[in-house]
Length: 131
Image (tube, rainbow, N blue to C red):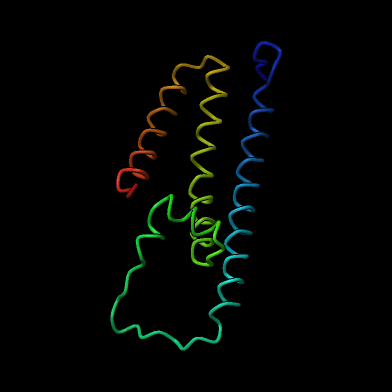
């Protein structure tokens, strides 16, 4: 087990990354669950919509700022979308923490591999984002 300048060992970084994933998924699930319950509380008695024609979401639920503004205004759909955003951010944060760990260990091969994976995920995630 490597110690990094007396700070962290490999096991410590693995524990941090595992904890991050665990709490990220639990947090995202809790946000989506609360948003879903709130949505049912608000719209549970509404008639079933017609599924013969597709109606997309408004712009407010497809942008980061729109989702955050809607969630702070306690709009149920925006709260659910916020939970999905937290779920998407969880593996990205895992890769960032792995990159920090590999940088502390000065493992150049894994730093390069992790940077490539991070770039691919960020480009595919934010490439089609409407800001």
